[in-house]
Length: 250
Image 1 (spheres, rainbow, N blue to C red):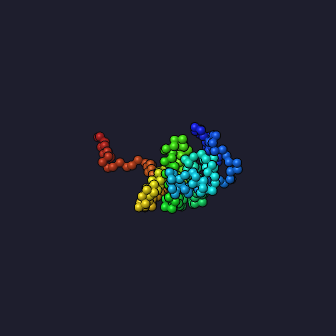
Image 2: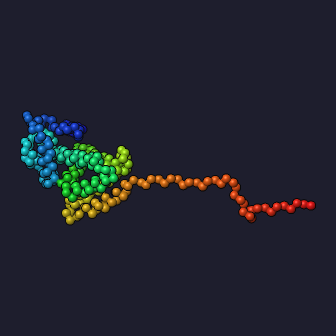
């Protein structure tokens, strides 16, 4: 994806964006500098929010030169995207691990319990997502990358739903389940972020009951009713239907 003045490498390549003519690569960048910047960015962005976070502060927290922020990411928006991509990668890896290690009959309850823990104990992850949504709306150049990140999350949840429902590759309905689940959880966590008196867990428990009841595998079809056997001979006519024998003429 080419933007004015920037060269972007597609997400997943592991290479950072660079700006032409500015912020050239340092002579000897530290090998783990990018990872440290992402860790520091996650901590500060989640704690203080996008507007209160400065690139200088992230670099100081990571213990690297400020120029490396521009070299690896180019802008604060791109840093937020990279931070959220890493959080999403960890989220998807955990879902994959749960599918591989949990018996299928236990997976729905285990997955919902894990989601409940995120809502309750990891509000900073939720806040990063809301900052990402806002960035995707205000920075149209990064909107496709944000949309791609959301789609990847939908696909991973859909694979988990399909694993429980059918054991096959995700179908359209599995993707619909994934979108509903993600939208509901995002909404509950956002409400809790804005109103600390709101407890999302009872609502989350109701959502779990609704979803689990609806994804139970359908009962096996009943065998078709057996048709009565055809009678081998004609039924004896009723007495009224019998004709009286004719009296022979004399």
